[in-house]
Length: 329
Image 1: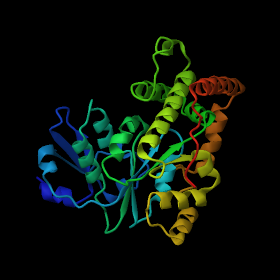
Image 2: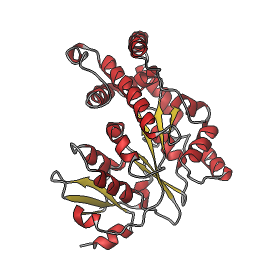
Image 3: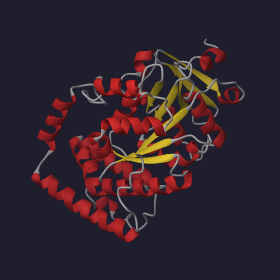
Image 4: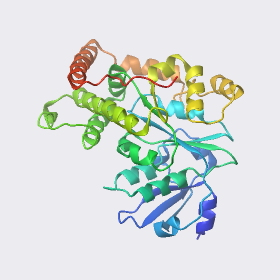
């Protein structure tokens, strides 16, 4: 049995789940290559596992490092940005840790428990290294509480235009459409007033429901940025990232205070990150061409245009500018 001291001193032991009673936390030990793999950390099982009392964790001393976050509305190159910012020895990216899913399943996680989770995730793998954490978009209700755990901690709010969001859902097929509906159902519980839509949701198309989820995310990001402060939470559009890679990496690293230099940024741009699909590791150009060929149609294009017009009118009467104005520069 591994001792608590060893688990806490070795960041390869990652907090993974909280038991339903809220009394214990499961840690999994991941090999270094598993941290760098394309799979989400939520799907990693680790080479060893051990449950630890949360009371013991609260009383333990932790060596933590600087942490920052990439929050996102979904299907907007968040995994790509996280991978691009990861520089060996300087920045460790944590791609959708399961512990944040587990935390969000609690009805009202305490501030102390959230702070403990952030401290455990921010243990550095090397001296002076920073940690960038990218949760799933399903944990976005926790943004204000997460950002309140550390004064001055910074985040990027990454989003995209609605048509880009909807086309990404279409490319994913049935699972994408299911995910789009789930995005709405989760966001509807906290991100805006939806009473007027509740009775109509069963009769709406998948893309209509997903678009409402996207609209709620825009509203929530605006609210969250207002609460946190624009100096700490900067908005980035995925299209800007795609068209201005060097500038985006440079400004993202500066905003998150990652300490990257020009030589680091050149190495990122010249490396394999942009040549491969961030989620699968396959050749990006080949996958993109295949996805477009199998999913694009005039019928779907018409539906997306109509849904975008409808959401645009909802946003207008609500006084919400969408997508949220980019502030990262």
